[in-house]
Length: 483
Image (cartoon, rainbow, N blue to C red; front, side, top):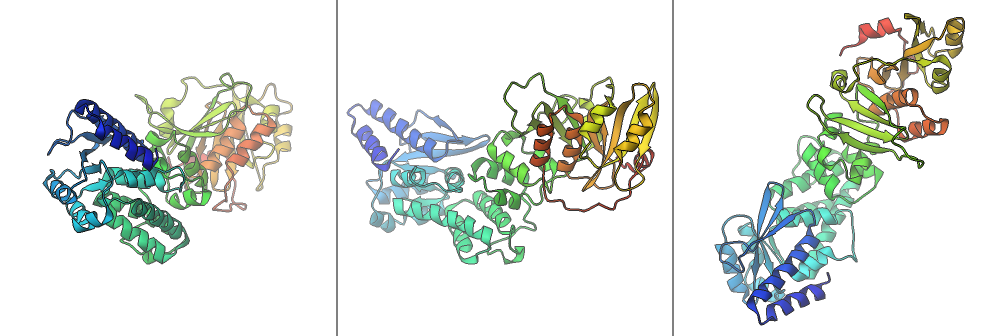
C-alpha cells in the first residue's frame, strides 16, 4: 500500500457520513498497514475507537502484547498531552494523518513519546518502511522491532527511510569491523527502541561484528561472548532476509546441537537451512539413525533438507536430514537415540554390497557374521585393505557385514547395519557432518551419484587432520567408548 493510497483510504474513511462505517473503514485500513509493517503479529480489533484509555487494537506475538491507539493529529499539542495520559503499557499510537514537521517539533512529540515508552507513527512513516521499492536483509527485522518495541515519534517519510538505512548500513559495517557506521546504527537503535529490543538488536550486531573483528573493539555495550542464545538465533532466522553463507557462518561459530534443536519452532524456515549448512564445521554429535525412505520417494529426486523431528512420549527432539531415499536422525548422545530404535535387530549386508558402498570410505575394522559366529577383520596400517576382507570371507558361507569402524577426519564412527545407526567411538564428539557422511553413505541404499551428492552436501573444511591416527579393533573401540 503506497502512502498516497494509505492516506487516501484514511481520508475517505474519515470523511464518510456514517460514523459507524467510518470507524469500520478506518480500522480496516490501519489493520492493513500494521499487517504490512509486521505480518508475524496477530491483530485483535477491539470495539473501542479513539478512547481515552482502552486500545483500539492489540498486536500480539505469542505471550507478548502491545496496545494500539488510533489518534487524530490535527492538534499536535493535544496529541502529545494525550500520549502522556495513556496507561504505561508501552503503547503504539497510530496517527490517522501525517502532521507537519514543525508542529511535531514544537510539541516535543518525539521527546514525550520516548519519555513514556510510546511509539508514535504515521501513514507516511509506515509507507516508507513497507515500500516495495527498497529491500535490505534487515528490513523485516527493523519493522518487527518497531512494531513490538519501538519508541519515540517516527513521523516523516524521510526520517523512517533514514532509520532503515542507518540500521542496514550498520549491520553491513559490523560484518566488516567498521566502527563509525556500526556506532551510528547502535545509537539509532538505542534511541528508537525499548530496552528489550535494544538489547536484542545490539546482541545480534555484536555477533555479526565478532565474525571478523575483536570483541573488545565493538563500539557498543558488549556481552561476555559473541555466541547467540537460542532466542536471538530464532529471531534472526525469522526476520533476517539473507542467504549469505558468510553471515550464517559468522553468527553460528558457537553453535551446538542442543542450540539447533532449540530452534524447532522455526526449523521450517529457509534460514534454518542456511544456518545448519553454514556451520557443518562446528556442530558435533554422537549418534544417528538412518531410515529407509525409498517407498515414500517419487520419481523426482528428493532435495536435501534439514528439520527437527518432534519429541514423542519416549523420544526427545532429533535433528533430521532428509535426502534421496533416506532420512537420518541425529542426537547428541547414543542413549537419546535408543527410544527410536526398532525392537528387533536386522540382518547385516552382503560383502559385495558393503564393498561397493565402502569403496571411498576409510575403514579401520569390519565385523562379519557367519552362521551365528563373528569374524573381525582389522586394519594393520592407516588404511583398511578391502582385499583382506574378501580373502578372509571368500570361503565362508553367506557372510554378512554387521558393523564397521570408520575413521573420519574428526573421530571414529561405528556404523551398525543391524541397527542402522552410526555412533561415535572416540573421546571427542566428531563433527555431525562426518558422522552423517560415514553413516548415510554406508547404511542407505543409494545410487553411486546419490552417494556422491551426500558427500558433497556434507562437505566442510576439516578442523582436525587425523591421517596418522592409530586404528582400533572393535574390542579396543568398546574400551574407549565413554558414553
